[in-house]
Image 1: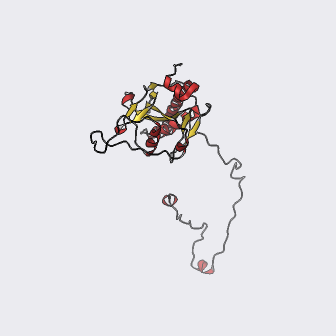
Image 2 (image 1 turned 135 degrees about the horizontal axis):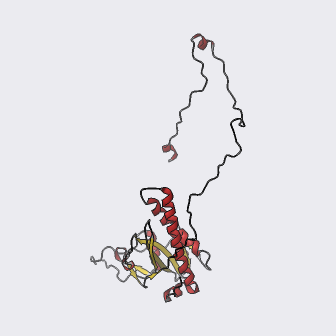
Length: 264
């Protein structure tokens, strides 16, 4: 599906704007496929497996689709488990804003973590900054200096948000654009949030668990195995006199370890 590039996408990504948009849409489709496959294999009554897989895949599948574009670079924020993609002047940050279709203009960032604070140093400034005696707008939005690889991105880098709506049943919609972080995690859009095309085809996902081959292949039958060594000992005269029964096996030794030991 061909869509004309908006002016802001060309300003941020240059001639690769169309390729980046297609890659982001495909990455989200692959994210959903992987998460649904994980949920199906788990056969769980809850959707926790879907949620965990979806969260991981929203970063990793986008990276798969975008990493081969010229100039693309993976950026790992400080103490964050995943990498974000930097292409041209755009640093992409995907996040789920809803489990159902809803107005993306009223979307909020899911959390106001230190990572979010650092990312939004690459975003436009919010329209309202709380004054020391201004009590009408809730808590002020804190700021934080970028750390780790975020501190190395070029000057002029812009944070491009990729909000999407999905649940364990379907991927509903996705957008991208630039926004400031306002009060109470509310987004103040600097561009019109642009809908992303979500293809129906999946280019990368795991439909079933990986089969681990049997590691024991040489032993074919009991007769072919190595004959065990038997330890024989004679009975003492006192045992024989007291008619102590013959002991054919050593007493089992109780295992002193436990799962608790293994976790420490």
